[in-house]
Length: 142
Image 1 (cartoon, rainbow, N blue to C red):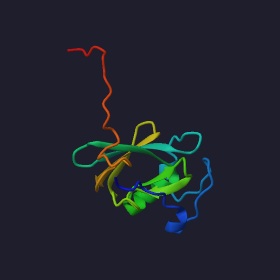
Image 2: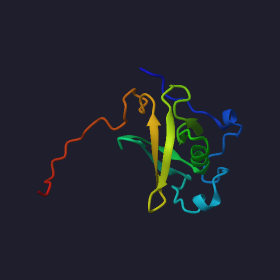
Image 3: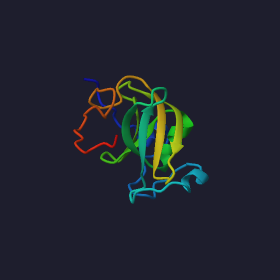
Image 4: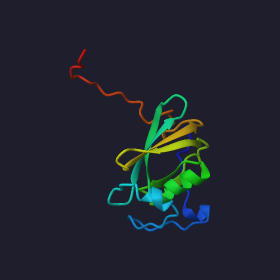
């Protein structure tokens, strides 16, 4: 099984690891930041899909600085809630995400990140984190 991605702290990217909470410092364009609706801990959901097929690969969290780094480096960067650090997808696993586009949803509380995925997106080694189908028993209109 491939190694899961380890966090990449701000120190590796010439930025200190920020404090927890919504007041983490960021270089995100203020016009973009003004459109975001964040959770109380300063995060927006990032839904990640393969750019050419539309396959949904994973979901992660971004704060303003992670979004800034994603937009300006072309490498998907996320905020780890458990480790309280930034991580660049593929930095340790080699399963990189090269960003093709980022779209903000109509409410400003989620972004859609379209990527070229190299290798598995999921830390389990699966291509996608959404590989377990659940039974749907409700009626579907015909």
